[in-house]
Length: 378
Image (cartoon, rainbow, N blue to C red; front, side, top):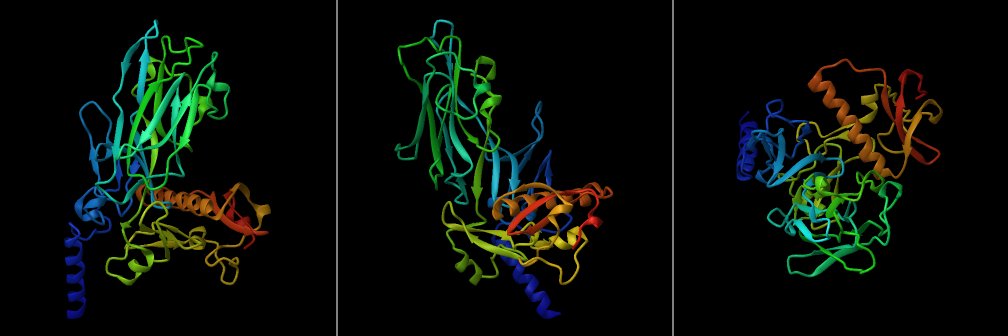
């Protein structure tokens, strides 16, 4: 008993050194409005891994409840691929009927350097311009050019007929890896060929390339200003340490049960992922990642696929939700099963007969929904 008590005191001392008390299962709020807040993040000091993961849930007068990190509004947090979707203002310029500048915003500066765990996602974001004869540039903290593009209009442009940002009314450029500081500015480009700016606006923003669809947009006008755009941040659980170094110090190691450690690809640090065949929150100190087969309740010993922890099923018994790379499948299945768990725990509703199935067949992986899981041959 003395040994157990001593170990408990050591754990408590470590958490206090991190700036808070150990999180207590069941005593932490996990929602801010409609946004789920998973560990290592928290809304209270004793519910976050450290003060660096503490978020604010605000309810200002006249507005909806919002989850805030500094001055950024958080739209979604994913522990499956360690990303965070936040809302970002646009940079804009608007012109009157005579083509004269009528309204404009200041350049937008975003500084993530106070918290080394965050980077602008170079794989999920694009710098984007909507408008005619307008250019945008992005510079770093030293004022060096890092990205930019020019959108032009030599004639009337209908974006609803476009499938990509080709440069006509819309242009895009990539975001370099490892950036923590961005300065986004916008300026007119005078082609002297066509009065394209009369009674119109131009926008520049960094946008999530998964949610942005140019065919759903129009050339911006005055009433379109101030709406904001979603963009993606990559985050790591601990900076400036590799998996090899982190695993040697088990007292501060962040990955839970049934997980793998991955060195962060967008800066120095590491993050955690569920092992193949498992789902859940890889950072949870209480549950870790859980067996997909047990979730399906159709696991039979000796009937797993070749991959460790995978359930085997016939592709003919399932409607495919999609076939893609292993990382996409892992992230998708993790999100869907986690959402199923949340609904079971928080809403206490009876589960339906529709089940998510993860399978491996003919060297391909897939997930989907079946109306009757008992029909699956395992």
